[in-house]
Length: 79
Figure 1 (cartoon, helix red, strand yellow):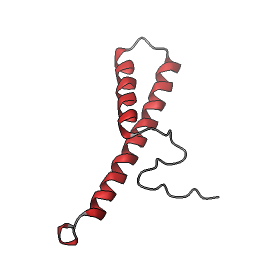
Figure 2: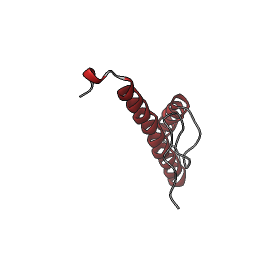
Figure 3: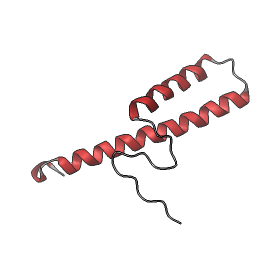
Figure 4: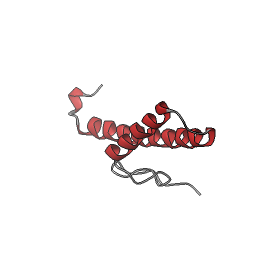
């Protein structure tokens, strides 16, 4: 069963429903915690995995914004 392609203003269905700004802020917090250290290996791995998921979500939002900008640009400015 295939998953429908998300629309420009929707995150992929298998991702958290966060805005770009929320995901970016949480990612920054994950990085701060990892840099501070003092975590167990399991805690560090869990944070790393969460950070990877948040980075993918942020990239999704950026890609969709880029697509929307390209679609909105006049034809003579594209390319």
